[in-house]
Structure formats: C-alpha cells, structure tokens
Length: 136
Image (cartoon, rainbow, N blue to C red; front, side, top):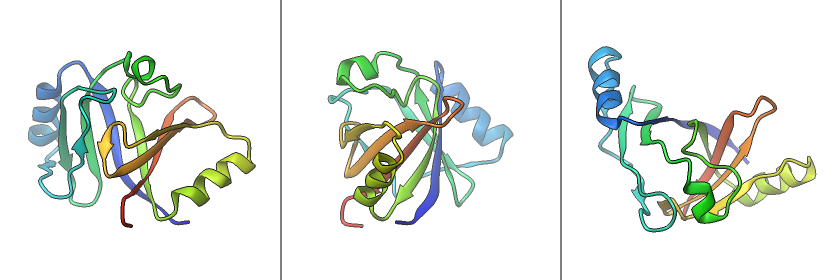
C-alpha cells in the first residue's frame, strides 16, 4: 500500500477570502483538473475552493462542526482541517490501522463521489484523511 500526499484541507468561515488570499498572496493557481465531485446531500454541504502549487492541492472548505453529527461518524474532517493522503490499497491500509489499534471513521463516499475516505487522528489530535479513488 503506497501513500502519496494529495491535499491539505483548511476549514474556514470565509471561503472567498481564503481563496483570494491563497491565489493573490501565496501565488497558488485555481485547480481545475481532477477535482472531486462533492456529495452535498450526504453529510457535508459546504462550499469548497480548490487551489494548487502544481503538485499538492489545498482545499478551502466551509467549516461545518455539525457534519460528524449528521453522518454519525466520529472524526469530523471539516472542523479543523486535515492533511490527506491518496492510497492505492485502502483495504490494506485499514487493516494496517486495525492491527495497530488506531480507530478511524470510514466515510465511504459520503463527502466525495468516487473517493472512499477514512479519517483518524494523529497523537496530537490532527486529522488525517486517507482515500482511494474508485478504479485505482
């Protein structure tokens, strides 16, 4: 199972201001290719802007501390933001976490069509996403 850094998610109460900042001040470009199809009726309905340095995406998402409650999942990926890795074998990675006693929330495709996502915490409480894209 191979992990590659895919994106960093920053949660915000003002997506437009964050989008302007990351484009105008940080010099990132608006991401237009390979964007996820958001499932806005399955737990998270916030707006998201996508920018990139050409290699790593930054997802600027509307903060939604209630998303975890609506889905019944413990780890809420849009309360503090998160770091995301793309995986080539999510089942093997979940088995890896299970073997080491690391609990995770399996969001399936509730937030993004075609992305099976899990979320868990590092020892300091930072949220980590690992996902696999359907067909990869």
